[in-house]
Length: 242
Image 1 (tube, rainbow, N blue to C red):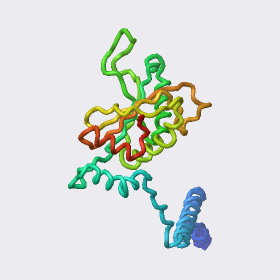
Image 2: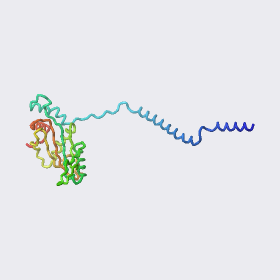
Image 3: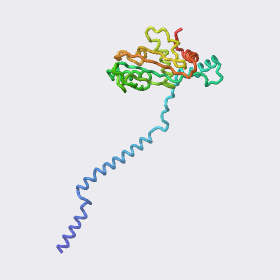
Image 4: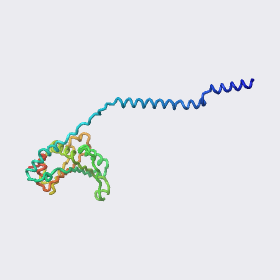
């Protein structure tokens, strides 16, 4: 009888014990807490999505370049009547503007080339390309592949915006400016002008600029002759010298 009572007591004790040891329960507890947190986060995310407005904010409309609108509305028709074009595609248009900045001091100090590239990026609104030497010249201590300047090519809206700032803001700020040379065409409708100081552009802070560099600006058009290109640039109010 005593043996049977002991067996019954052992069975009742086993039945009262929870499944698994205490260590297993401690390991399962943080997992359960993480699962509950994950469920709460998912519920909060769904609630946030439900609270978002159905109609998102519309993007602001793009404003076209001022000179582009002027060309399409007035200059194109004016050039067609002046030269008697039969097809509207014969009318010359602006193709691109190339800005080149050569840094002779970049042979000795690469930081000057990087500083000039940063200034050119502010002026043009586009990241320039660092130009490198094509061959070594011992007289100038120049090696092949060494950075000697930077350039940038502008097209479409940025081209018209830069041209607007060049004509109306930068050129009037040039020291002793008496007009552009009307003969600086290459015979194929392209015009090149030089600026000795790049600080004439309002984007450059004169107090923070350590060096002053010059630049060459080439305006490329689709005109076949210099007369057509000159008429096109004159319509854009280029200040040619009389």
